Length: 67
Image (cartoon, rainbow, N blue to C red):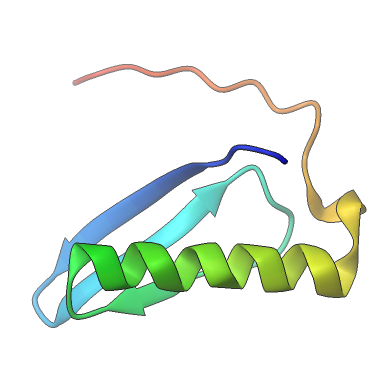
């Protein structure tokens, strides 16, 4: 099982979530943080099952920082 960093953003009309480290566009949305997170997790699983493991970026370098 792989782990992905997921970004969840609050917008005026709900929440949008997307993963870091996948090729292609994978987005989840919902009225709440939890709904957006559940939606993007489902979308990630569907994306990998549909397009195969090659969509997972293996040579990505992640660095966390605060501004």
